[in-house]
Amino acid sequence: IPVAAVIPAAGRGVRLGPGAPKALRALNGTPMLIHALRALAASRHVSLVVVVAPPDGTAEVKSLLDVHALPERTDFLVVPGGDSRQESVRLGLDALPPEYGIVLVHDAARPLVPVDTVDAVIEAVREGAPAVVPALPLADTVKEVEPAAVPGDPEPVVATPVRARLRAVQTPQGFDRETLVRAHETVTEDVTDDASMVEQLGLGVVTVPGHEEAFKVTRPLDLVLAEAVLARRRL
Ligand code: C5P
Image (cartoon, rainbow, N blue to C red; front, side):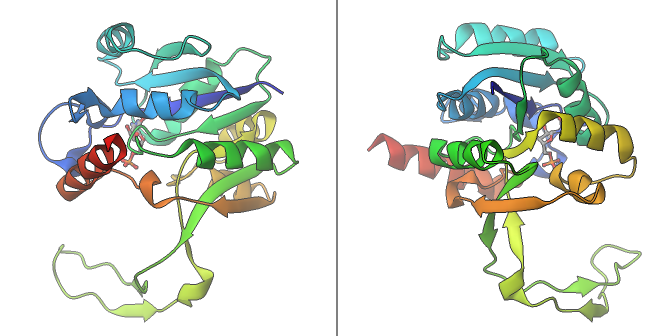
C-alpha cells in the first residue's frame, strides 16, 4: 500500500516569538520545513509528501523546495492551509491522489524525527492498526487544573492522573487513509492531534515508541536544543 505524508506547516508560531511562519524559520541555516521533509523522505516507504503552506506563502514554500536538495524518489506537492491545524490537515488530505492507502500526518515543527520512528509508525499501520501514534513516558507529573481567567493567577488543582499511565504523543501519526478522512468528516470540535479524532469514531488507536529527538519546536529554548541536536549529528 503506497504511503503519503501530509505536513501541516501553515501555523504562525506565535509562541516562538515574532518573525516568519514557524515552519520557515531556520535551524542551522536550513528552514525547519526542509528538515521535516527530509526526515519523512528518508523513509523508503514514503513516496509523496504534501506540504500545507501558509495561505499567503505557497509561492515561497514552492521556491524553497526548488532550492534545497530533496530525495528524487519522493514526490512533493504544496497546497495552501487554513485557519486551524485541523483544517490545514483536511486540505492536505483533499490533495492526495487515490492510490495512497496509508497517510502520515507530521508537524513541520518536529523537524528532527528519526527515520526509525517514521518506519515504526508505518509498520504498525501496515499490520492493521487504523491509527498509530509515537509516544513517550512523561518526566513531569501532570495536574488537571481549573484554568484561571487571568493568565498567571493561581489555579485550583482538580486532579492528578497517574503518571505511569500517561504518554506524550508526537508525530508522524499514521492512519489508514479512509479512517482519517472519515474522522475529519465526522468530528467538528477542536482537537490537538489527529488520532483523537479517530478515538472519537470509537476505533482503536495504538502507540509505538516515540523518540526524544521528535520533540516539537515551540518555544525559543527549543530552537537552541534543535540546533544542538543537529550539531551533534554532524560529528
Ligand atoms: O501550533 P502547533 O504547534 O500545534 O502547530 C502544529 C503544526 O500545525 C505546525 O507544524 C503548524 O505549522 C501547523 N499548523 C497549520 N495550520 C494552522 C495552525 C498550525 O498547518 N492553521
